[in-house]
Length: 202
Image 1 (cartoon, rainbow, N blue to C red):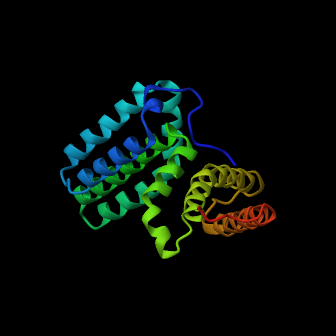
Image 2: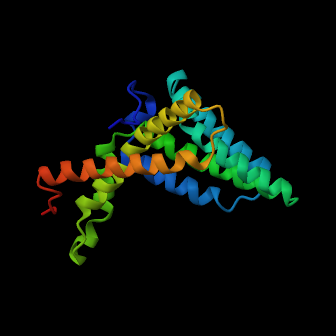
């Protein structure tokens, strides 16, 4: 599986994982009530400046991770233009863009092991209720690690479609992508079973 973390250390890599995740949570809570497009655009600009402060590789990776989101944002904006609510569409699109970019920023500068350790620490009280916190944190880690893999395979499917068909690509790619995801999930499950599964923490 591919990791999303930047290979080249930056100043944000040195921050503790718990502090970055707490700052992200606070920023997201403060972000949601804002309804002025200009203010939200300014906040998105601040996030872009944070990416730029990490260097060109971080900025390029951040833009690449946002690329799959652009189609969804275009559809949302087009719908709001059709119904005559461009301001609401701009607020929603900018809000989604900012929140996803912020989450990506934390993921790019934090080791996956450090994030899962924070999650297990937060979920520690639920162990008394019988929750296997190691399994939950592993599931979240696998989701994060599988996102770039599925994105890569989705791009490969789109390139194969363009090479073999003159027709415009539509929803037809959805079924093969789902089958690829299910196949990967089966292989991951088999690998976990072969290694004894996920042990409960002491």
